[in-house]
Image 1 (cartoon, rainbow, N blue to C red):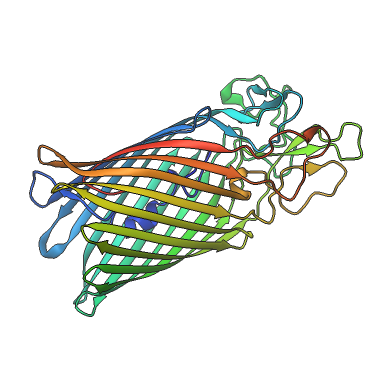
Image 2 (image 1 turned 30 degrees about the vertical axis):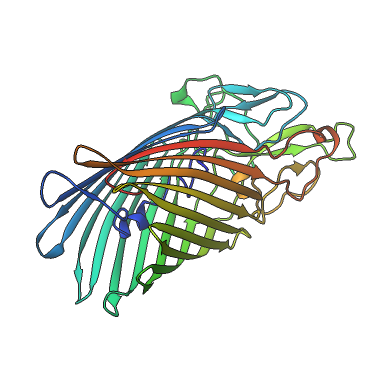
Length: 442
């Protein structure tokens, strides 16, 4: 898991739509009130020296007549710290304009440039109605919303499940869509425009230059939009009394403004220049305005004696040139009548996007698109952890999970040269995650 510095379509920042379509998680504990189920969870995430996050989730499900359900999920999270801005390290200190344009920050020589202004708070919620469908199925429909100071997302989802063969086979279909509004600090930067100088003005006047005019590299308090449509089809099969398998295919299409408005690409002096490798300027990134992703997921659960093995694999590919492999293994072992521990390991590998560039060179023609966002570069990652659950405080059931995530960035196709030689252009990153949950399994 890697948190995005502003928006991460794969971390604490996304996933509400299809999650709502699949009914908010696999298990909920009964509350004191009959016909009402409640659950909650708190996640603490920290990348030492970088980003820290706190997320709180609350779930309430009301059961009605004839197996109808209404579920409400509310999420609050806050993130602070420093995050890579995309520029490469340098032998000299580097100064960057803050996203608001009202000031600047300086990165020491030989260090990965980190934007230390990262601070965000998000409120999100979803409401899902679920009811029986035909003779052996269920249908659900949901609404989702998420709000941050520079981002607003509104969406809807629906899904159906149908059981066959005496409930041994289940087929599921789900679709969701959202409309997002992006209103970055300082306005939407012009793609491939140079980073402007800090104006020194107040935050409320962040796009005005010294002459009172708006910075031509950013819109006049402007925003932009994007649309996202997701679909998934799944098959779950009970093989025998101890074995269950599951297969999913999903597709996602995003269109509109897909740039990260807070990311730069360094422009460097070329290898033949006396100042080879030194930065000249910094350009705002440019990505394609559409993105289609496909993924295939397979999972098998096997009961062995009193323990349960859970192994899964996901293959993802997209039209940006990225392919990724994710393999995960969990082993649940009971301790006593209710308590269990579940160690797990997850391996991840990713290729780079076609337009990923560690840097650009002065004098060369600009490519059609370019981004130095490390999330789009080649990488491997490993997550190890342990979950301890099933213990009770009074009548309430709790679980605690502790994980460590380590990301290993790989060098891209562009080699170090000149003053870049000996610098770490692909700095690794580690993170700790602690989660305590009540009444559900996130």
